[in-house]
Length: 136
Image (tube, rainbow, N blue to C red; front, side, top):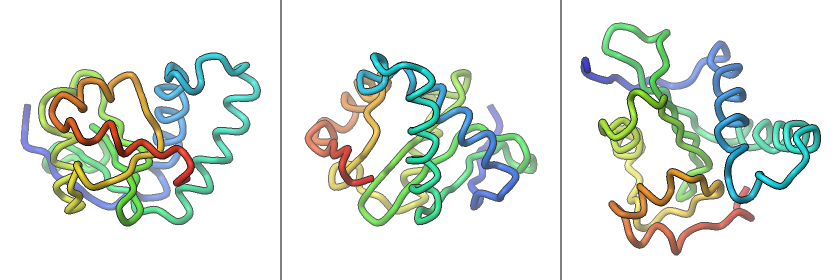
């Protein structure tokens, strides 16, 4: 894989962010038993609220800023969501995004627990104690 660069999100990135966040979080323990119509409508509103006050950074291949590999949505000491395309997972993209934002993974809170959190928790064991869905 080529090197990754990180840039601030642009308005053109928002459809990708909404679609991937909503679809990937749909399989979470939190959302799996919610009727789809309710989940997509209400969680879209939650994401919209989070995005209005958060910093969003995009990972992309060097020299190709319009190809999104992943993104990170944060506020001070809070990670709301991290998404990396499947084919780029376990290659350090999420780590690069977190390091770019100068976040200590063992000190942050996170608001969205996903099935991939089990993999991340192996790398950062203290992280599992920092799940706070009410920090949204």
